[in-house]
Image (tube, rainbow, N blue to C red; front, side, top):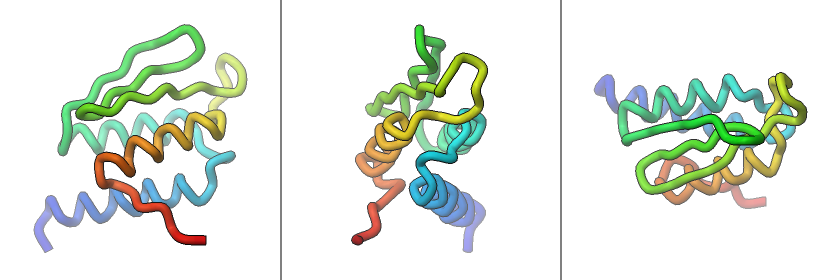
Length: 96
């Protein structure tokens, strides 16, 4: 398997892991995924009033933490992140 395919598979596994535990995701994990995605898509981020606004290719999503300085991300922000990943083809929701 090529290095690129290995990185893609690893990234998909990390995103799937985040999807399994949306209430236990940290801002650092999202940032790490964004850093990995930058090898495949143009990415960007900027500080916003209540968190960070991320851009990956054509998708945008906001990541909010529970309180300023808290490491954990609000679950609705994780859902927005997963929706963007699904649109870009990095994540497929598992059937219930």
